[in-house]
Image (cartoon, rainbow, N blue to C red):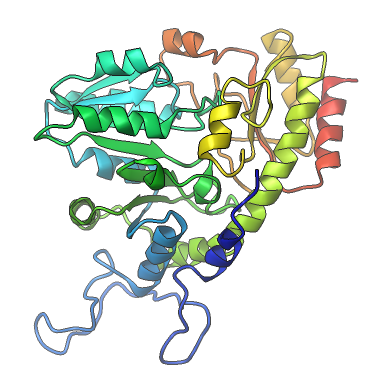
Length: 387
């Protein structure tokens, strides 16, 4: 598998045009809240930065180009982007959700939006029968995360899209795909049949662990209009400075993802052969149950690797504390390697029964493999294992 060569050029030039007044090759940071109007309602396309800002416009254009979408929308965080999508729905709607999703997504759905009359059903979407059973006349949305967080489950987006289309009647059923783990470099869900793609741009798109952001990409003009209204009316938009930084980061996204994926492959193969590891979750391994499907719908396996430590919880903690190149921290997708304990950190809000069912237990470890030298990463894991 290899990145589409066009992705490197697209990432560098997406959304970028020389600034017309000075010729600046980088879109300037328009740090302004408001814009002078020639007459009431007569202006140069901008009136207030919550509604639109030239720096954000350039960044949103880049997001759309990357995801092969017609429209991109930037939000202040990944969860703000998810909120905007859910706000397309009305009380009484059913949303069928992948059971293995980011803990914050599940928390948003279970603890915040469920009380507004929305019915969230968490289902193993790799099982077609379970999906079909969960779909009812009240279903308005199916929410997929692939690869999933933290067990790297691969969901067949084309198959889900086909089933959702069959079930859509007068009331459309929307297919949403969280593409954060793959990034637009390795997966383009709209081309696979999705209606909406969502990202935490904090992760790979930002790539430097120095900002928070989210994004939604669509090609349907009606959906874009509805989401644009939510973005404007609710106001959870990123500041111009964050938009500038994120747009800048996009230019190196393809190069970074190539290195993330190469390093992750080396790390996963090392772990798969280590006696202190019970199981590795990484679609790039031929033994992984999602390997074949990942090869069909992805252009690379990305940089996320999880594994079950063979030992007790206390031994797992000691292993985490001994790491020196990998840093114990929340989040992922930055140039530096991070390690996370999902049960106690990112997925602590997931109900305990569901955590056990998904295999998110006391010895599960999630790695965000960075762009350091692969040998240094393997050496770090080796010394932490104590062998």
